Length: 78
Ligand code: SF4
Ligand code: SF4
Image (tube, rainbow, N blue to C red):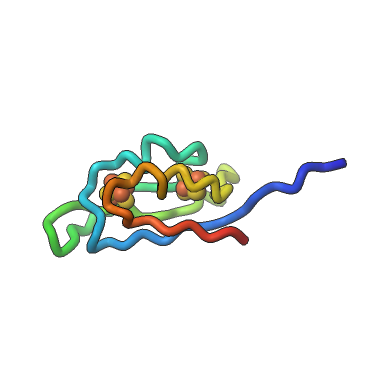
């Protein structure tokens, strides 16, 4: 029986993100990137971007949200 693949996406609260980039370091799918726009606190927050070209997709593993010290990430399963 084929295993059902989890799919999901995340939202990132730009105002809460302090730019520690721990989420980037743990994401197994490499779909979190550093924004080139500063937030209100003067940090470069992260943003979620799926990369259609190489097929990487969020699997809703929640590792990013778990490691975020500022509770800036919310994970949604699809
Ligand atoms: S772990 Fe949280 S605070 Fe750190 S870069 Fe990611 S979203 Fe921002
Ligand atoms: S839920 Fe998992 S795959 Fe999706 S962005 Fe977070 S760490 Fe990456």
